[in-house]
Amino acid sequence: MKKDRANGLSLKEHEVAGNGLLDRRLFLLRGLQFGVIANITPTNSLATTATDIDLIGPTWMHEPGEPFSTYGEPSEHEDDVVRFPVQNEMVPGNGVSWTPLHLLEGTITPNGLHYERHHNGVPQINPKNHRLLIHGLVKKDLIFSIDDLLRYPMESKICFIECGGNSNAGWNKQPSQSQAGYFNGLASCSEWTGVPLSVLLAEVGLRKKSKWLVAEGADAFAMQMSIPIDKALDDAFLALYQNGERIRPENGYPLRLIVPGWEGVLNVKWLRRLKVTNRPVMARNETSRYTELQPSGKSRMFTFPIEAKSLITSPSAHMVLKGPSLYQITGLAWSGRGKISKVEISADGGETWGEAALQEPILDRSFTRFRLPWNWNGKPAVLKSRAIDETGYVQPERTELVKKRGRHGFFHYNAITNWHIDSDGFVSHVYDKKENETTDSDINIDSDWD
Ligand SMILES: Nc1nc2c(c(=O)[nH]1)N[C@H]1C(S)=C(S)[C@@H](COP(=O)(O)O)O[C@H]1N2
Ligand SMILES: [Mo]
Image (cartoon, rainbow, N blue to C red):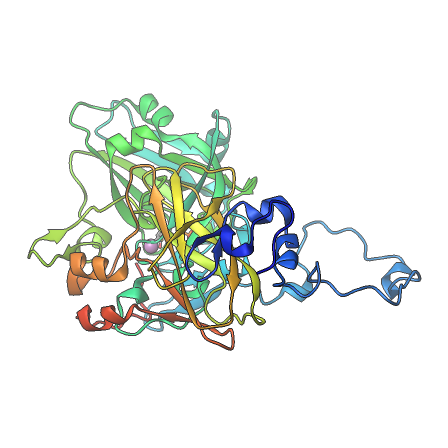
């Protein structure tokens, strides 16, 4: 066994878990260099040795480039980095478009790639004609124009939004073979800026019996959702900006509600009305949907917070590893209950686990990027990631989740995802072997979200 001369340890001794998972600090210390010493990478770089040195340069160095633009676009060579839209044929404008999480890095979702969930299309709203009414159990009803709202003191928060129906193909009997983002990408993370709801609720003055807030959108679906008043006063806000610019039409322009860490459906877009009430409105999306029968025979409803979840975005389904070598396993973790405290990775199907490096900043109810070096030996392997949040909650294995939530599960699928790598390096999605026996789910979800 070759020695890593820097500290006298062999690569084997840097292993933190079985099947080649290495210490999370190794890349930070010496990049790929330690692989060289351990004879894993053929040269000390993944690049080619320079022989012909071209000092003339490419053609684009010999003529002026393109002129300036008023609004930048991604390079034409990145045109595969797109959302994946799926429309419900029966209802105009009802569908989703998935964020390509497997093609992105870092934690912030570019505005043009934020996932979309509309129930009846994207209204084209002229902000001059848009109003927000706050009424109900309040001391005085108030109407705000967008210009009024833009004059209030604002705050920013980086947080994820995840649809309660995200990853729900995970309830199916067979593992989805879509790319990671195209079955887990009804989740995105942005910096949202706007006016704290508590400020406006203080202006209208809450009456004693106020317990809930019903939010209504100005789309043709007239989405209505009920939110407990305590959450509204705690950290909900009315967003006008998304990653520094005004919110995109598809994400709620000119005004949307942000309810940090709670299921996506509460983040009402194109917000036009907030009614303070003493009980929930019992709208479609809190009765016929989002109410789920449990194995105990009782139903659960108003299951607001998003539980901790993680997903390896690379390597992930459809990718191909180029032979035995060092790889960086990377992905995203998030929790609606606070910060991510730890992400563990397994390269042997869950037998042993190693702790991943968490990329700073680690923010409350935001995407957290994790990474871990892996020395793949070229043999079939199963990768898993497991998130643990600051409340101590541990992301469950699929078997556990299915056992707990039963065969009527549809929302809040947050189980561990397994990526199988075959000896050709091809990555596919698999369930644990034992899961095939225990899963009695007979649903087949491929075009229903909510
Ligand atoms: N007015 C309105 N608000 C809405 C919806 C909608 O269809 N209409 N969809 C909801 C659902 S189910 C989700 S998951 C999020 C999606 O937000 P996004 O499209 O900005 O990602 O918005 C919520 N707010
Ligand atoms: Mo949703």
